[in-house]
Image (cartoon, rainbow, N blue to C red; front, top):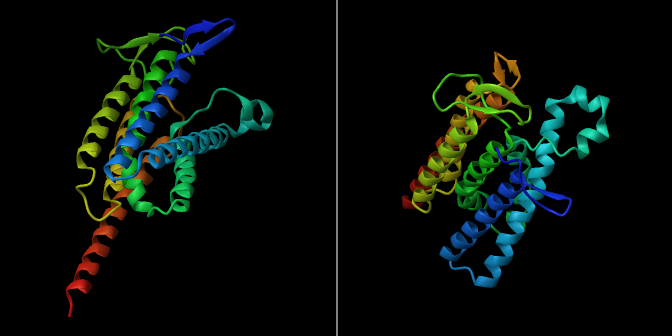
Length: 260
């Protein structure tokens, strides 16, 4: 564990914050590369990539905070201001929803078709997630249930601390995230119609989080499932429905175009 990398005077540079910055910068440069593939001019793609990352960051932070408050509503009622301005509570699924909403507004305003832009950023979302999980490992957050596997870890100064060996689910999710990124990155530009790659992201990311939750210690709600699992199921269902509907629409369009 390395919760703080170093200090600049009295200011601690937290490892989780550094990994978030690395995640956003990585996605920034990847998006610039993808925009270059589309033939966009250097100045324009630099400006657009910067705007996307900024909107994603703002929307992600707001979405994370809202999700965190909803999951901890009783604590929010006890201390509303403390919950709103606390440094804790950067929940990825909430951030995904908030970031998606913010970037969608930006993409539509810049003249992109929604599914086309969603396909472009799908690999970037899971890449940012995978890097962010490295930050969770460094601060000792979001670990799994107790286990006796040889690679189990303890987090004596984690959030919360534990001296009992547990599953390092942060490592599992980082590796799975990089794997999903590799699949999506290799498929970019090869799937038609637009929207299929983003649909695949929803299915793969939803499945990854759903199964990881079985060895996490998050509170259970409906049918013994955590909030993250319920959202993951919705992601998989949405991705599956989108694939079916998009292919149906493409087939109907092809029939219309070929008819005399």
